[in-house]
Amino acid sequence: MKRILLATVAVAFATTMAFANPMTGSGTMGTTKIMIDAKMMTLYTYDKDTKGAAASACTGGCTANWPAFVAAATDTATGDWTLVNYTGADGKMVKQWAYKGQPLYYYAMDKASGDTKGDNVGMVWHVVKL
Image 1 (cartoon, rainbow, N blue to C red):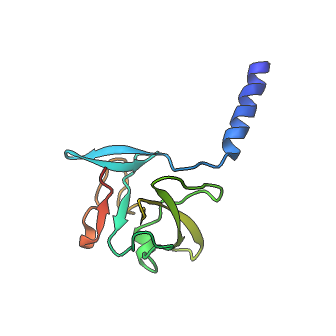
Image 2 (cartoon, helix red, strand yellow):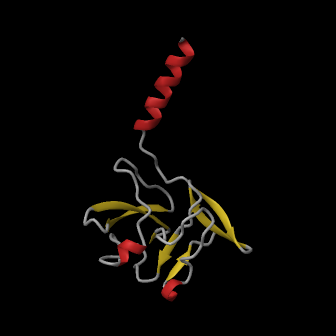
């Protein structure tokens, strides 16, 4: 009984904690290490974003194909990670993770973990190389 109670308390605590940085890892594209999220989906940067800016440059129709790597409302950033403003396709403002000043995105055409279909789209979208 004590174990069940402690496990319940631990789960409840973990679900209410604010995380300092997102859960990311590395995958490979050929011989290049790239950044992936906790679900192993590829993350991208956009050349039109200004490094260190407070908001994403991906607006309007861009947001349908390039959704943000969104932070939870309670997340805080540290180290190489920051949070920027992003207005989604639904018009709602959210906080988006940025790595080394560059906002991070998914590509809507990447359907499975390991997909990198967004790399070099329009010569302005790039996988995050590690």
